[in-house]
Image 1: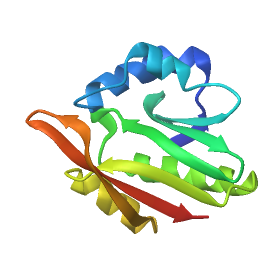
Image 2: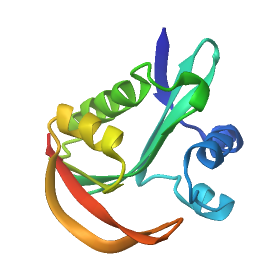
Image 3: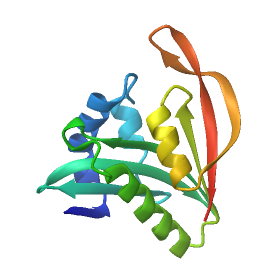
Image 4: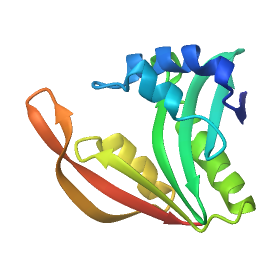
Length: 146
C-alpha cells in the first residue's frame, strides 16, 4: 500500500538519491534544496516502508507548477506517479488553485501518456529546452484545469 504525505526537509537526501537515479540530467543538490519552503507543496510516496517517490510543486496564487516528479526504479510501474499527481491535484484544489502546469521532455512518451490520462492537455512546445545525450530536445508544456 502506498502512503502519500508531505515531503519534509529532513527527507531531501533520500529524495535526492531518487532524483539522481531517475533523471538523465538531475537537479543539483543545491537546486533540490532550494525547491522547498512555504511556496511549495511537496509530497512523498512511501511503499513497503520506504520512500518510493516524490513530487515537487510550486504554488503561486491560483496556479501551480509541477517542477519535478520521480519514482525510484525499484517502485516504477506500480502507479505511484499517478497517486502522487492525484493527491497533489486534490490538495491544490483544496487550496483554491485553478491550474496545474508542467513541462515534460518530448521524448518521454510514458510520462506524456500518464499526464494525458490524468486530463493534462498540451499547451505549447519549447524548442531545445532540455539537455540530452545528443544535444537538446523540446519540452512540451502541459496544463490541467483543476
